[in-house]
Length: 87
Image 1 (cartoon, rainbow, N blue to C red):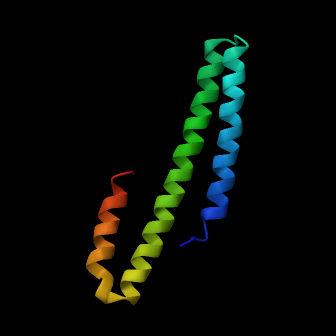
Image 2 (tube, helix red, strand yellow):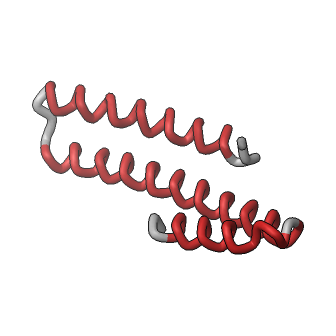
C-alpha cells in the first residue's frame, strides 16, 4: 500500500543516490578526504531523513488504521513495535 509520503521519499532517495554517485566520482578523482567526508555525511543525513519520514508516516497510518479497525489492533501494534526498531 502506498502512503502519501512515498513519492516525496522516492525523490529524497533519488537525490541521495545522485549525491552518492558524485561521492564515488570524487573518490576516483582523488578529492580531499575532508570533502569526501562532508559529502558522505550529507548522503547519510538524506537517507536518515527519508527513513524517518517513512517510519513516521507509517506509524501515523498504522495508528489510524488500528483506530478504525479494532479487530486488527494487535497485529497493528506488533507492526508498530517492529518498525520502531529502525528509528
